[in-house]
Length: 354
Image (cartoon, rainbow, N blue to C red; front, side):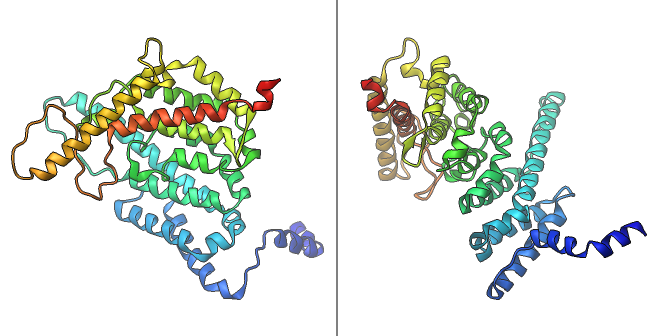
């Protein structure tokens, strides 16, 4: 009874509070909004359940349709107010949690049943993560307010920034890319970065300098003793943290330099301790890339004949193989990105003169 009396005398207040949550769109976009609402309803209906592969496929399809909906880019505030990004983050968190649990269970079963053939189920978790990350990257690009909304999840994104980096075709669709998109060309958010954020990246980068990429080694790529492919991705992330809108962010630049000095393994084997030096590393990487090109040429010319070469390196499955990696070129990319990062961290010439 009391609440009814309050509502009776608070009618105007109710309208004011409702208007604060109201978003007005042109009548021409009514159909787009209706389609967006249908897709969003289907996605939210699947949030509380463990999705089957068919349901995951439906979610991925709906996410892509949401991005292609005119409302997505024309009304970025509406997308944020509806908290669609929170729903997508929840899907990605659940997927990564199930993925970690499945990997843990697989290891336990492998230890318990050594010698028995392991039954492998198709793992589609990476497809869902890619779909979520692609959506969130586009979400961040629509407005600065949306970037700020995603920046709240920066810690989680960095915690999972070490997955899917060894596949060039997925560049722009990984948690690390979402983390970068959440502060891209945004000086305010770049200045909000704290040391513990960048230290996580430095830890991942230092691991790349000390151990090979097991995923690439399994595919037949040479075991270099370090990982230039993922290392370049982390350096690229740091580069965009210190260089925003064509200017150096001095606070971040100083922090990155300190982190690299503390962890010299981040600089790659050529610049670490008794390393061979940058020039020698570049020459050797060029030679490796030339040998890979020669091997591809010989393979193309001698198709169907047995050709024995001393240098072993995987060849692309086809001309359109986007995940193929030229190891020599990957080493060159790593050191080029490192030099570029250090150059962007350098103080302004006027500061040096002082």
